[in-house]
Image (cartoon, rainbow, N blue to C red; front, top):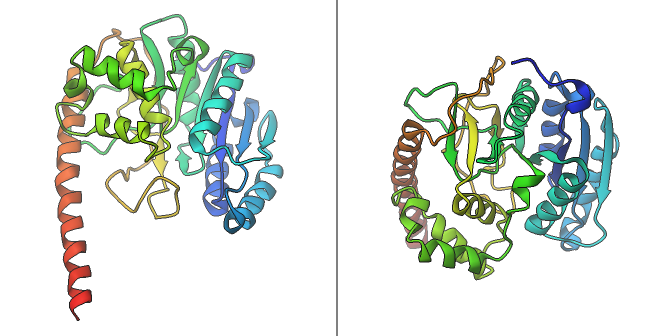
Length: 308
């Protein structure tokens, strides 16, 4: 499928906070995309939460004010700290309402040179298909061979795109989402048969113990029966698992090699791919075991240090 005309390129929303080195790397990779020059970029810069973060926030703003290589660059600098969730919700809503669709990135997501092509092709191909809720550029380091593109129920958050029609279904009230999952007896299916505890993430969001917009987006799309399109080769790499992020620790479990060639977007049957779901369940179960062993070893090392 050929890429859409430049007039149809989707706008990009990039959310940044206090990581100048990460932000610079993300922008460099994004500008290296073949469709960057024809794309409008909106950058949402959250204000410092406290004095400790102010210098880093100012450095990020210095970097984003100098961005070149896009059709247009609009920088929105918040005067008060909104927090990640409120910043993303407000920014995605603004761009979707104005432009009808959006491609979303955060300041720790490095993209392949073919990311924008894939996202634009997919957003154009499935523009009129109501069951398709979003498009996702990241795919996990699973061992199972999968089709070039496939659908999964719900929505993900590492380099994604959507339309106004889907974003209108976003539900900010976690209580409503959890109640609906329980009323429809969907919590185990939502949790990938127990492979990952999405339900617990939602409970923590409700209890204000995390600031996740993503778990609410996933739950809203899951409850609506919407599907996301993903590639079998990742076009996004998360560089934020180095202890610098607001909501991520240190982990190499999600490390991938970026796709080095374009991914063709051909229309496929709009139904969840059983093989992809099974591969994701197997991956998450293995990841939980590996992380559990690492955490046990870390606890033992800390205990040994305390005893020394």
